[in-house]
Image (cartoon, rainbow, N blue to C red):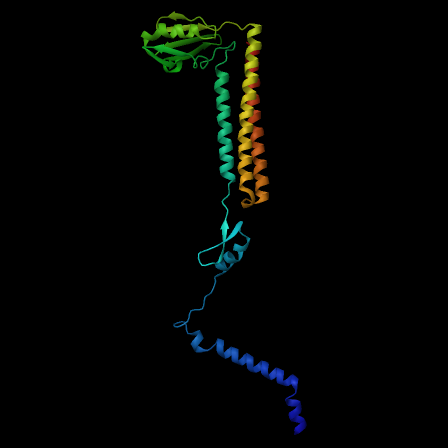
Length: 262
């Protein structure tokens, strides 16, 4: 009998017995009616969506900051990419529009309805651009028709065109003016081509300045903007720069060809 008792209460069996008693105690505690009664105790649970959302918070872009309760929250840094690109595109497009306006003012051997827009006409004591005083239309590749909105302004309109550096000598034809585009001299062609080249270089510099502003904005974001995203954004800005510079060069080449061919 004594041997049986010693074996029964050996250290190994005592450990197993204690473990069994502890498990029963926990089971009784967890599944007791008091704790499981939903009317008096609510057990917080997370749905699968909430669990995934909470688990992913640790991987969100940004830096940690403390909330009012002293706990850590994740501050999500806004994506500056769309704003940076939109601003750069707006500035580069403005440079291209400015170039187009400058090129349209240059006299070539061909008639163009926009070649007189920059001329200022003074009528009734008021100075206005020619486009607000008259309608310009192309009769053929060498002839323009200029019709004032007010027939009484015909003489002022004629004087303004003659005084311009375009070298035109319009003639009255009823209530309109007819302006014949004279052929360009070799010297004039060379001079105008130099102006085109200068305008092209100026607009390319404007495009590059827009690029630099975009890169400076990315750089100022510093560590708050992910490095990989910054590199990707810089590459996209560079691609935009190349695109707009090529557009400017193509416009200038086309204008030089138009001038040279007369």
